[in-house]
Image (cartoon, rainbow, N blue to C red; front, side):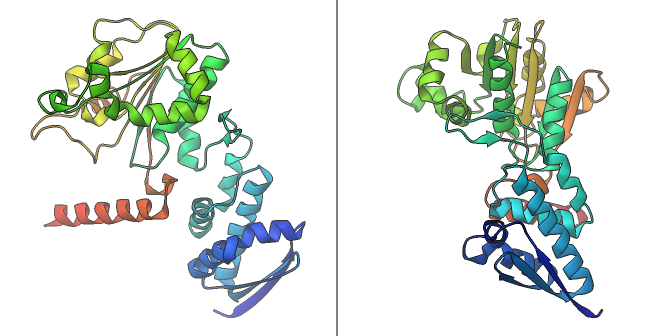
Length: 323
């Protein structure tokens, strides 16, 4: 293929600097991905390389500009996602991420879906009484569910938020932990606390907890209850038994919304125990009002190495199946 050169302008030097990133880290990712060279002079950017590489780099930059105009910071993971979409011929889909606003954190940071998988997840939560979010670590399953719960609570669509997790070591090992029962189960619930603190701030969270408008509890506390007008999140659902999953889902009362999150590759149950999440995904797949969203490594929004680790493990698992 012949080499080509493309020169274009952005609206300001600040925009050009945002595209290049601190220490030119963004543009290096672009250069490595598409085999191009990028040079910035003022608000002009010149791309040089093979025609297809330059074309893909332009598409990725257009996606970055679209997200920047929407108020999305051009962080490493965002840039990598734009590059991924451009490389697969889907760069125009990034426009689907604009305008979809969920909430504002306690520190004033807007919460928006960062990937198409996250956008689909948010859309299904809005549309359905029960949504399953299934996929690898770092895809934002729990955090976005909490954000949607807080949004629904503030809009008075629900009167309380209930977050729960199975404590998979709720037998012998848990007994060695210090303190009362709540102290013992708190380590299992910490990720849920963290998400609530980020969305509400510590003082607001404490005030709502004292009024019992927010409840964070182990799954065993759900038995025998009917939960009306609540936004209920079951996290780490892969560690439930089928009986626990059925018990949880049948707690749902009128005016409630349920989100179930989990990763079927990280089941911590004893050997030969069936996962309630795996079971539910099969049993409930054709039930109207229940949606199932599956994330992939492309939806990982944590450190880039998380995505690389997931890919490596998936590759190793596939190799074992071929033996």
